[in-house]
Length: 366
Length: 130
View 1 (cartoon, rainbow over the protein chains, first blue to last red):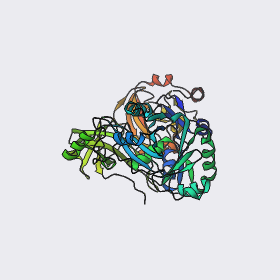
View 2: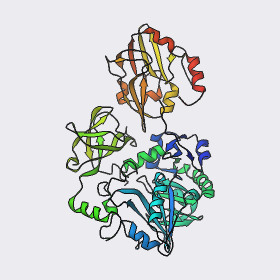
View 3: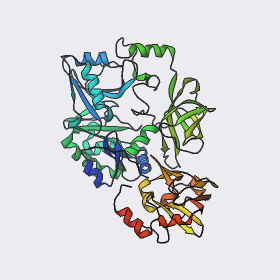
View 4: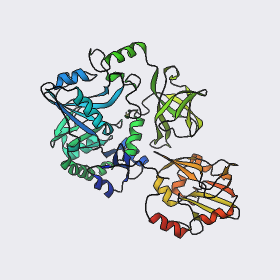
């Protein structure tokens, strides 16, 4: 019945998760909390109040040195120069074929000094990618083993951050951060809600975790596992590397064209992406809602009138506050079949189940 | 955990209640806790033959799908339609309203290979890796 991915690395707060009764499981080579109570309760807690997530599996790469700005400007698909101190920017990391090496957030943490947050499964790949392109006046270092990362997300997150860490952080703008305990509190997240991410040296992680869990519950905060992290990001239509994004999919196909600056003359994949932008994409990421019975899952085939038109990248039951929930998914389908409202079939355990293409995101906060 | 005495159990955490050649099947208290929120059940197909130890139905939690295996060989005579609109019954009442399917047993000897409540209880306590 149970078939859990085998996993090796433990989070710095492993013991805290066990103490809270977490069901542990594998994610990208890490043993992580899947849920503490239930995925549904945790999903709804973040939508209606707040949750705290331990996302210390994420990687951090520091790029600094006299040539750091020039280096990133040449290798990233958005302009870095306009980024001011304590500002951040999201983008895909693009390979020479126009495919995506990863999706990243670049934080400007000093003059000629940038911290790049990368996906856990891609730490080595991204490090090698940056290192392989860096010349003498740029240093590339993997700080992942030294840093921990927590997220506090949800409509009550601002009040909780203010309660615990003070009013200084209350007015942070989206994609900016404030200095905190040798790290930062940033207004970023991966849930579709307002929220904060707290990055600190590993030895300070437990005190931050404890402080939020002491003060947060009176505002409805709960610890949230990776199960709800996935349903929240799926409902908000945020891509997950290895599902919606990979080395062979381009940002335009993925709907991330807004995070590509084609007015930049030089960056890896620029000529390929420029051509694709002019000619249009052959396939694109869509969202769909099941109208028939069944839950779509990663890898399910998508058909139209019995012909394969694409594949499901993510799918799940998604809880709805005060309702019974919806079965939603994202997929890549042929551009000609991607019209909203179109009826498609998802092949679940060999049988077609009806679905309808709908606009993304499925959920947008008010 | 509650494992009723009048049921027989499988190592894959199904229970079966036999009455002559007829039987009702569901998943155990242990299984529903392990699966967590049941949000979808693909019902066994009425009239279809099933083989002992082979998948007959599917239960899905938010994040994963779990095959449910037939404890004995036979033919499916009914499936619990209430689970289509209320799959959470599997969590709330796994031995009662959350039953999965009924079957006509083809080889009654299959029952002898199944665990008693006491054996199953020991099996569950012996470790989490099944």
